[in-house]
Length: 200
Image (cartoon, rainbow, N blue to C red):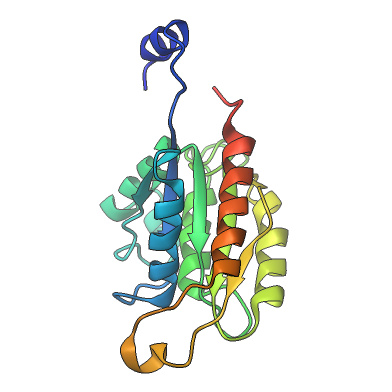
């Protein structure tokens, strides 16, 4: 949104709608974490605009590729820069962050100007939060995210939400989201919106 549009909205008493970028940490179609993201999108309806990051084609990070970043990386960086906040829905792999998600964050956190490696990145300054569907390992994985988030010069918002897979889902493919999980997601959404509400 342009500055002029923001000013017009301000004088009309309109509240600016924030843009939240969802990162589905599982590339599997219909994944449980994607279903959790969809439930969260419903919670945010009318409160924020939600988009999903298309990152399936992002290659393994290599400095050989960095000087002339692939188009998939350029598009990912643009989507991240356009967002007011980022919400990651992460599976747990070996009690840790999936390597593919870590790779994505490595690309996003690299300096945009390679002549200054400490300069701005696409993700720097953003507000992040994380939710996860897994049967175990939430806490050690969340701890890794909490260590990583400030290191890539971002900040976290809200208590991270954890959910488990109902036994039937392994056969039906349908994740049942409990009222407790929905309440946690709602509180997390409120905290995220509050964290970005004063940003320009």
